[in-house]
Image 1 (spheres, rainbow, N blue to C red):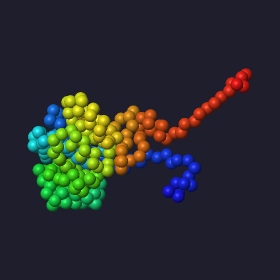
Image 2 (cartoon, rainbow, N blue to C red):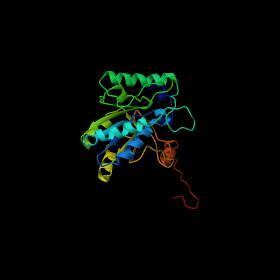
Image 3 (cartoon, rainbow, N blue to C red):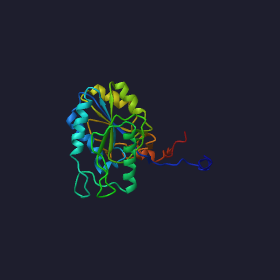
Image 4 (cartoon, rainbow, N blue to C red):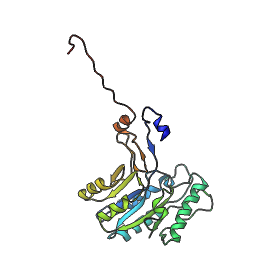
Length: 246
């Protein structure tokens, strides 16, 4: 604060600080597409700031969706090939260890592992895409940005419950909603605390639209006219062309 007090003008900065993005899946959603797109959180081995790694599924379709999600996940293979669309290695052995520690701790505290998520012996940087259910909302893997190929799945019974649990996070970068009900989609878009809400769509970023987050996900926005406004200052110009002093 003393240092800030010495600065005459405000510091203009955009700070993107990561996220723990949720997906909310309702019974009327296209479950096949939702399951397929949910596994896109494994792109770049989950090392994407807005990867949807908290998956909230309505109780009426929970078992069906988890089965589809596990099926899609187990079709993925870890490979270091540059042209392979499936997950490759994590950036460092330490990053791989961080994923393993979060998964191990979740399992020790009652989490279930419908997939065979485990590190691969051939290279310390690889970790198999993993889906975990029966995890508490306050578990470290539920709260921390793991930045790796691990998804957690939760069951909910109402819009109100889903909104409350999704917003109970220190992050607010991105959120995904799967539903055919336009009213439900608008309700969640209004209520979810996220810089961007995508409906029936894997997270995308457009140059024309502002991108940034709420809470600890950052300050400011990039892209769009909002970014221009953020990094510029207003100037008022008053000009007299002459001939009239009034």
